[in-house]
Length: 225
Image 1 (cartoon, helix red, strand yellow):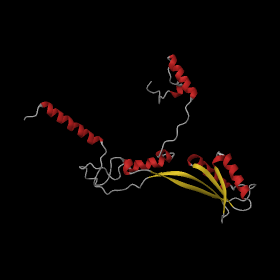
Image 2 (tube, rainbow, N blue to C red; image 1 turned 180 degrees about the vertical axis):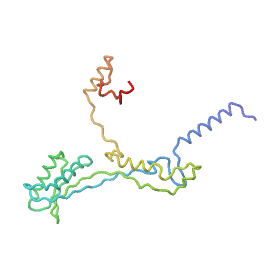
Image 3 (cartoon, rainbow, N blue to C red; image 1 turned 45 degrees about the vertical axis):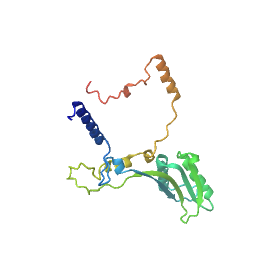
Image 4 (cartoon, one colour; image 1 turned 60 degrees about the vertical axis):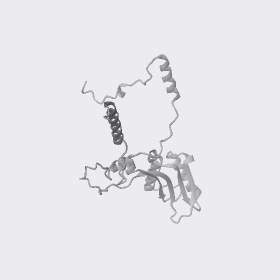
């Protein structure tokens, strides 16, 4: 039986759909275990890291030495920007521990750390130094540089082991808060006043968008005008 033109068209259409689907789907290289998705081949790992700072401290009236004060300010600034949870103050146990804790607690609060995020305590210490600590998160991925594939063999069209590795490293190095790679931050509350204004303009048939000032025009240059 000779196939009709209609049957041939159906078969050709089915083959075209299958070919298009095979091109769009991720390619799994059974020989190398590589995918065409860099996030799968070079996943970014987000792990907690504990940062500490030890400072010499004698008495509240003397305070910190200038160098230690600079280290303290930089450490606290890093905590405010990248820290997670509370910041701890551990003073050497013994006489003067209470005054030391009070000094550092007040100094942290003055630097902008909420008091409910300041944890204080004492410890047995041989060096007599005050230790501050907090937890932050770091993003990283495995090193690049796998040149085991034959790049001269282009006929196979396989994904190279280094595909996307540099991009993943750049993302891990540049992300402001590595926790954003794990889950999005919670959304803030809505602006009730703005919502009421937009809804009022909508009912009245007026434009609902904000009015732009000349500085907010978005124009890069006036040369072409």
